Image 1 (tube, one colour):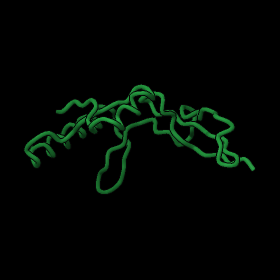
Image 2: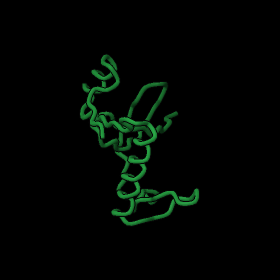
Image 3: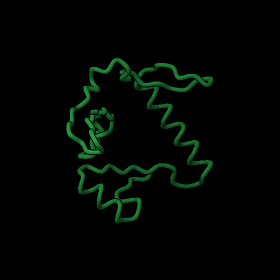
Length: 107
C-alpha cells in the first residue's frame, strides 16, 4: 500500500512542499505541492493583538517586527536575532558537521 507523506524540499532555503509516495519504507514517488494555490496559504501579514492574529498592511507588520526586536534587544542587552539560510542540500550536510551558526547576521 502506498502512503503519502508531506515534507519540505531540502534543496534550497525556500522550503517548498513535497508529497512523497512511500511503500514498504521506500520513497517511490516525489511530487511538488502547489503551495501558491493552496487555499490555506497566507496572502497577507498577521500581527497578534490581544491574543488574536489580525490581518494588517505590510508596513504595519514590518513596524511591529522592528518594535518587537528592539524591545527584546533592550531586555537582553545584546543580539536577539540571527539568520541562516541553507541554499543547497550539500550546505545542509555541512551544517550538521559545523557549529550551528554557519552564516548569521545579527541586528
